[in-house]
Length: 320
Image (cartoon, rainbow, N blue to C red; front, side):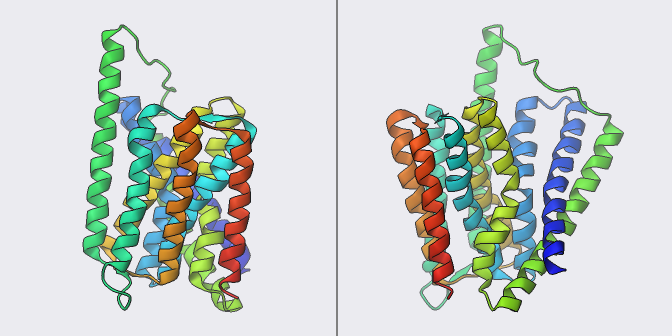
């Protein structure tokens, strides 16, 4: 029964995020908020809502292993499985701006989290509320800088006489409000069910919470990113795949972990620090083909999938 509840929780999370994005986007369009702002905020935030719901709920319930493991595991899944699968379908290019700003910032964020954990000494591996506030401040800077860059691009296009008429017709504000409320309810209920079910499974098998967070929970909450990137790759819109992954990873490290820690301090272990270091190493490895050829080829896609299999084997073996 607990496994059925876990699946139901994931469904509530994914569908809740989908309803939230649709409803809130409709309301935003009704108030004439530009489409690009919606994409940078509501849609980007929506795909990371499952991770946010799970990590915040886990932090409040003291399931610290799930809270941290979910974020690190989701980022590893995004980099190795989502990017790997997308590149396997079709080579994935990356923009120069992403290589100059977003990608390095994602690595810096991972380094900051690792330093925050070990900076207080080996006897006090904890992410404090202050650490959470710092991560949230970096997140605000990231959003500000990104919006500023898009505004400059949009103004340049307007100056050159180009416009964006690709926005989908919006649903009515009333329907949008209903969708938003249903989405929020689904996210909250789903997050609670997933944390409770994952914790029960971990206890039943004597498995460490961190392992559950790094694997089952991380995979489940990363479904929106996986679906978005793979579908984009099949449609030939491969530039979306890399941007989606990097943007999601930044949201996870800065917003999800930041808000979770700001609400309730999270005690971690050296395993979490090691996982964070592995995340940094993987990010640097992927940076090699992106910096050299500005894209991920099919060969690299296969390598990333193999690396994820090796990573899974490592985290499973260390708990045995």
